[in-house]
Image (cartoon, rainbow, N blue to C red; front, side, top):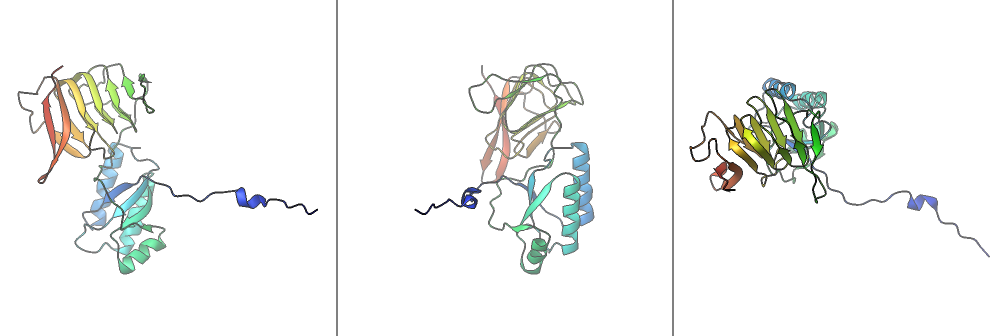
Length: 251
């Protein structure tokens, strides 16, 4: 009787579809010196935000063609800051072939939800602990006041601050931000494009508030209806564009 042995190589891997979240860098200028300087300032001010994240370079909004040599320079700068350029959107003809030669994939059919600022902060973890929660991803809880210069980032989750966020401090979350005290510093919710994120504060007095890249600073003062009061911030979209909606929160 013949013995048929199974080919071991047939079970050593599977090929399946997979989804990959990309950060999109949407270029609005062909001036490589300007781009490099702006990226360096942003990264030096807040290092580590998109560290080792895959990135798509979008040239579709440029009015003139981006130079092939400048693309290589830009990719080098991105890698210096620990970003991983993988794809390009909007490239055509010879420029697309050059991009492919640099290892970029043609992603002209990719949908970009929102331009995200290349900014993040490294979290000070001295007094950070997980919050009890029934959901799969627990919120991050900070239970001490944040002083000027301190920065906390809740990656992939909500952030809960059980104390004051002083002027000069910064709190960032990919989800919602809850401040059970005075919010006098900066609060950035939906940092990676979550347009449903919100900001809540018992005392709303921020230097800056942002949701999914839409900002408002203290230079544009809040109304007396919400300034210094319990309030919430959400993102409102209409035909004229996106804007922040700040309204009282009645507890």
